[in-house]
Length: 165
Image (cartoon, rainbow, N blue to C red; front, side):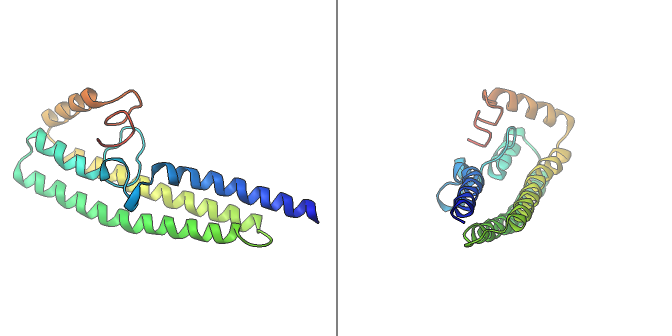
């Protein structure tokens, strides 16, 4: 019986460490990531705030800038809901891990659920980037690629850290 408890404790600790590490690594006070534009992003992704600044630097028309801002605000609102769902799912996982006799099957299902929610969040971010890209003229897209190349750091992100400056 002691072996089972030791095994369950080890399993719960290992699972918690694996799941919490990415959250702590990307989360900053107030739920904001580096640059204050949301949680950490993957390589090549910039935050919505940076997107508006870049659009202004590209010289988009006032009408296009308004459309971009509308898309950014809608995406931010959706992101709040998605992040909330991820946080709730992680809390449920912690509850499962904290049980006296953790249910491995339920824990694994919850990990899958968290993964699906995180994929939705990533798709939302990439979807915003793609929808903004469609609003740009070919010349603005070329200028955007040049700006990205100038600011891309060694780790592939906007400033080399995988997120906005």
